[in-house]
Amino acid sequence: MTEHTGVKLSGEPQLLARYRSALAALPVTFRENASATVLALDGTDPEWVTRIAEADPVAVIVVDPVATRSTPGGAAVLDMAWSGGPVGRNVPQASDKTVGLVTVAFELGQEDPRRFKDAAVDALTVVVRALGGPVKFDRWRETSHVVVASGQVGEATLRLSGLRSKAGRGTARIVLRASATAIEVTLPGRGAAWPASVCLVDMDGARMLPSEYSDAHRTSLAVAAGATANDLPSFREATEAVLAAQGARDAGLEGMR
Image (cartoon, rainbow, N blue to C red; front, side, top):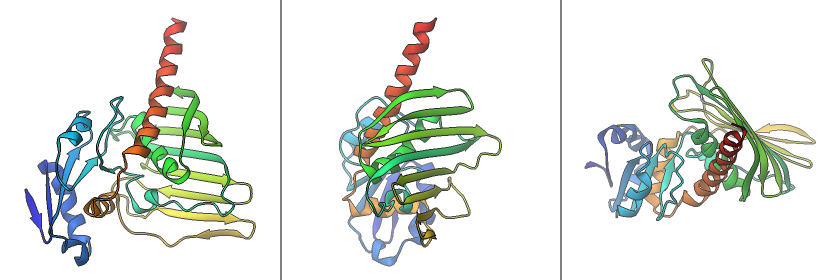
């Protein structure tokens, strides 16, 4: 158990190390909440789903959760590279409200341990938070280096693409296009030296919103200490859509043999 001024944080040592600097950077008003107990779980272990139900702290943070067919119960804050940060949690709405086209494009480096399905779920969680659901893919093509998919999110057309390359920086770009406006969101990867950005585009031109210099670790920890957030519903919607698309693709490939 590692204790800081006003917050109790427990979990595996390698996870706690990630949050020490995040705790130090949070304001004193947060650290005065002495009753807050936060449990950090390693999401790369598929058993994180069952460990949430067994845990009894004030809040749970799951770090880099992998997509799983098991339905997570309870409540948890999910610390993911793109959807865990301040911009990924609060994408502004289009002024004319009706989004007709959503494009999601992400890139992974060769050393990035995430599989395409986990990266896609991370990015789609941002979209589900912004627009709701449901999400459904009618096409999913994937190789070792590229994934391309299309479908629907709510009433909007969805286009998703991902690339793994030596030049990949772990960045995701999400664009929500309405009839007269567009919202362009760029989300950096873990450890990036630049912040996420949001650009609003309308008939008068493009306008950048003020940058928020906070990473997913710090943001998720602050959210978890409030003990009011639950990221599981949006994560579940994104996960079920991606796994269903992959399952349909695999079934089609099996039928061709």
